[in-house]
Image (cartoon, rainbow, N blue to C red; front, side, top):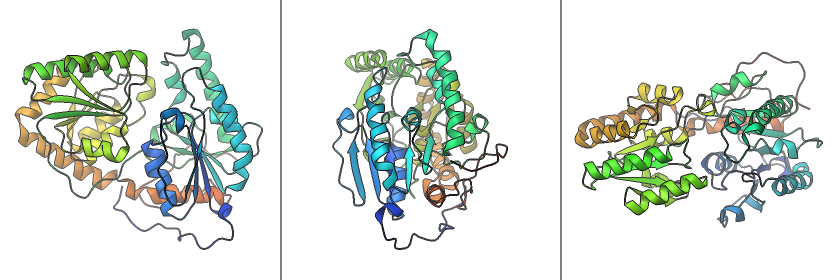
Length: 409
């Protein structure tokens, strides 16, 4: 990515009606304070002069929305596990009543494609966060015999969605799933101009926790570090457990003094906790849905000058190696994680070099400030009725699927 430059498209001029530039943003799955949705995309739209109606499961997550000029919030039921029907019914009702009065509609959950079936919403955008079909094959709440057919159904739903709606992709690696070219809006973060050097006493993990994301490994690594440093280094988890097994693992580890749990923390506060840490952990397993994605936490650690300790998923490994901003450890290996952290603890000058190198690389290549104009342009293209046009802002490309005749209907 290049350094931030002015948007190629002109700023929005005065429009006669709010609906001529307003955007409806909908999720029933994600936390209302999800960093990509709330603090990057919605903020970019508001800053560009687009009023936003944000429909999300606020009460389902125990969130009271903070006032923000230009932002209207709507509470929806939360879709979780097998309890999804009421959320889909409410979302379908919302789309019927609210979509026509907004210039663009952005949905963030694949199940919301079902809520849009049968409704003509030519200005709907699906923001593709993950490879849902691959992810569903490891969902504990779904019976094993149902997982493969469900994954096949999701692939079919994706193909139908591409024919009817505009898409934004959070990863270039999602290209192969689709036939046409779509804007890629990477899930990066805003990179501060300056950072503090890595500290000595805290190792952090930022994000939701599951066993596949390293719950058991972090608990064991926390024990090893506590024993080998006589309590001088603590592993801190900034984020919620997503399932009962992870809850049990983390709670037991905290009771033993092996971990410190913060639970869910608002993005701005969470990043302050990350800053000054000795290392940031990204310990995802080798699962199909992780192989084509860069964990956002890796961007966030690099952006704040914190050395990364990551498992060798291809994109995370490549990012850490290109930035020289961290260390790569084997999958499911708590001993290796503890050894990597101890290496940084015993060699603070090496940790400082990694932190500085990672921050410099993130500023040059992965700063949301260089991306947000392209996101706004992509939304405006849908508003104008030509969503296939690639964004003109620097640093963001499109996927290169084969062309398909016809436009979005």
